[in-house]
Image 1: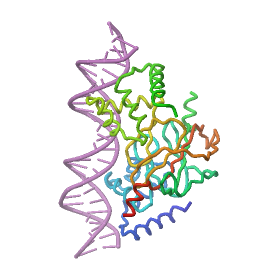
Image 2: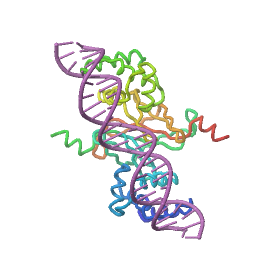
Image 3: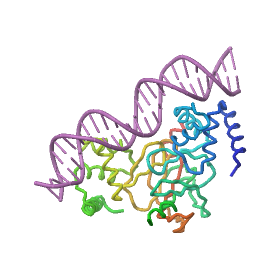
Length: 144
Length: 144
DNA sequence: TTCCGTGCAAAAATTTTGCATCATC
DNA sequence: GATGATGCAAAATTTTTGCACGGAA
């Protein structure tokens, strides 16, 4: 895992490569994603960014996320509930999802699957594993 | 994989168990899901059901899907794009997802992962693997 | 006959778009 | 200075809700 400032450097590099301007808002959206270990929804990202830039607009957050996704800095994930969630962790990793509250955590697995490059006619790129269960918090609540 | 009529019997059984009435609309929504091998969105399910019951309302489809999910007959999945998709295949299976067009297919994997029952503090229930790639159709289009 | 489920319409929530202004390069 | 990004407001889309009626048990 790269450190946050290395990742910001990478962000700057990617923007220059693709001819995107480096604006405070764009940077803020990306930073929020870097800092969050959960997978925030658009609304949550917006609320975070607003703490730094109170005048930021939700539309900008939507547009920025789309942009960041296009240049491969961010991924849209959506495993639970209805709203899209975003992830800035592009390293190979998997997810642990609470079936009760919808919390999503990144995890590492030591086991590997061997997926053929050509599979059901698809040219495969990658895979990810979602493990479903009940998180510690919800387990505690269920006891009471 | 159970046959369709066995699954409808199971549907009837589950409804009786949980005190739900068996209405034509409810049945139709479930049948549409049984028949589709892709993972339709709510809108797509609605369009299908409307062919049988032109007066059905979209609200009913939303409510029915929620109900079916509650009694465990259907699962909400959402791996791509923004809209929730539904799946009536509850057997252990995995997904092959086209990164270009968003098509989602069910697949079987012969390899198994061994996930501990207790994992990162979670009580784990199940896991599923999403394989990402480019589907045959999109591959063909990319050539031209 | 009793409720639960439905349709309809309206409301709420979410996402996208147009356009004038502003800021980065 | 040119071009692309932003904020605002409005539009479009998606999802949820309230209520009266109708149909399954």
